[in-house]
Image (cartoon, rainbow, N blue to C red; front, side, top):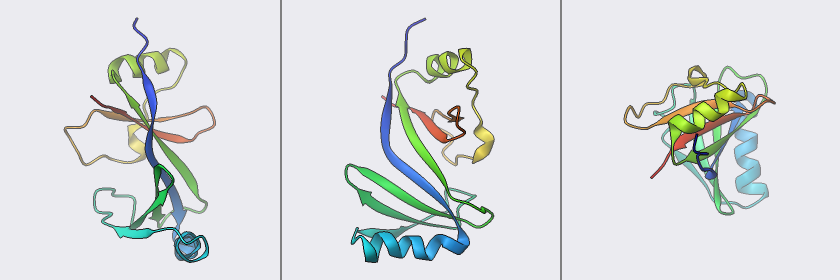
Length: 127
């Protein structure tokens, strides 16, 4: 089996409980002085509000999740062959967990996966 290329994506999502959301947005905008922009959250059904933060070469997404009790961090990965990558991951016990958040773009080739510590990653096929 050919080993698929897997690389880091530019998106990092911090899932934040509603009670801590405003203070977290204020921290990045007012305390650290980063550019913080409110964005449309309608494509992520579990997210009630979202802000993007330029975080060096990455984009940090501050996602308000009303039913969370503690924050969570989600990362993005890219692969040139989604089928081979998910097969390789399955060989070591990492199965897709697409139930964590529905994706609204039916044309995209993606899967949600979790690393052994339970951190969610979006694995997306890219050209």
